[in-house]
Length: 112
Image 1 (cartoon, one colour):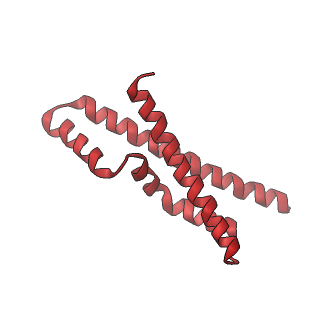
Image 2 (image 1 turned 120 degrees about the vertical axis):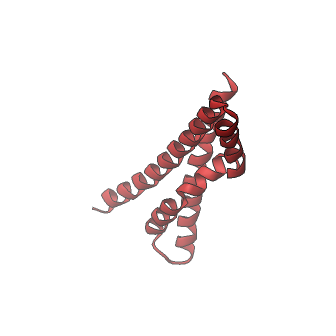
């Protein structure tokens, strides 16, 4: 497997893990502090999407530097790579958010 594909997969799963892990631990904290856990999980997941993408990319400065190389030095290949990395991280964050929403829907179905 090439390094490019490997990095795409890693970015996807890092963003997914940040979303799911942070939301589940926020839900646990809500249970401990007597707050509604599912509402807390959804709120955290909704506000955490952009941070999950930033974490998956390893900080935004490296991505901005690669985009700078691409636009101002004419290296279009690095721009395409960085955009693919960002899209993979966005897909992972969105998948994590959808997983949390699935937990919410399952909880609603269970209580009905």
